[in-house]
Length: 111
Image (cartoon, rainbow, N blue to C red; front, side, top):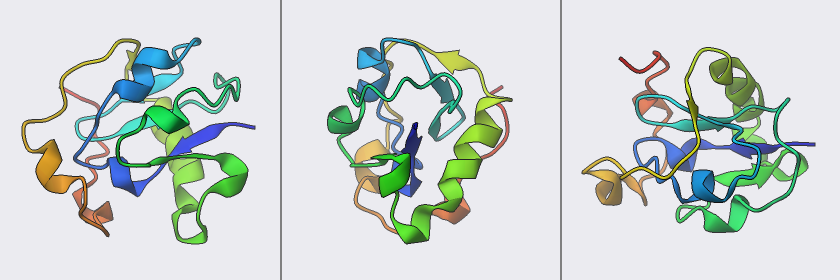
C-alpha cells in the first residue's frame, strides 16, 4: 500500500509532509508534490502533516481523485526527489481552499 498526493496540493505545495518522511519518497514538480509508490512504506506520517488534506492512503483516495494514484507513479519517475522542507510558493495560501484546480497542474520537470 502507498499514500497518494491529490488535487488539493496543486499550487500549494506545502512540504510539511516531506520533512517527516523517513524514506524520502516525495518528488517535486513545479507546483505539486507526488509520492513514489514503490518507495512509500505506508508509515502514514505524512498524511496528518498536510495542511490542505491532500494526502490519502491509496485505498481511501476519494473516487473523483483516483486518477492521482497513477499520476503520482508517473510523475515520480521524471521529477527530482525532495527530502527536506522548503518554503511554499508565495501564493500558496491563495490556492489552498480552491477546488477543481487540475487544469493548474504543471507536469513538466522543474527547470
